[in-house]
Image 1 (cartoon, rainbow, N blue to C red):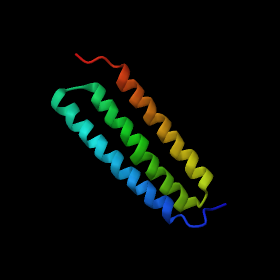
Image 2: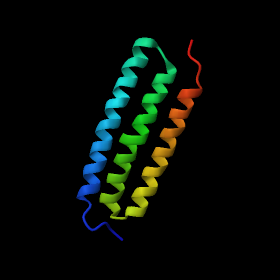
Image 3: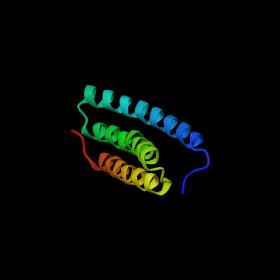
Length: 94
């Protein structure tokens, strides 16, 4: 099973990766200047949600040509990312 034309999916993942990386970069910069572990976790969460999920999807789809495997891999990365974002909300900063 494959997508008919995966170029739209690749384009959308590239946009998601770029936007997520931009948000993560701002979170990492803010975490460094304020020494905030919650902002650091927020950045990690966005990296997992966007960059890791997109990379896993593109890698799994291009290697195995299986959209279900690619989607499952991306969902695992996204779930871990949302866990990091949730943890960033629970952490108390000094």
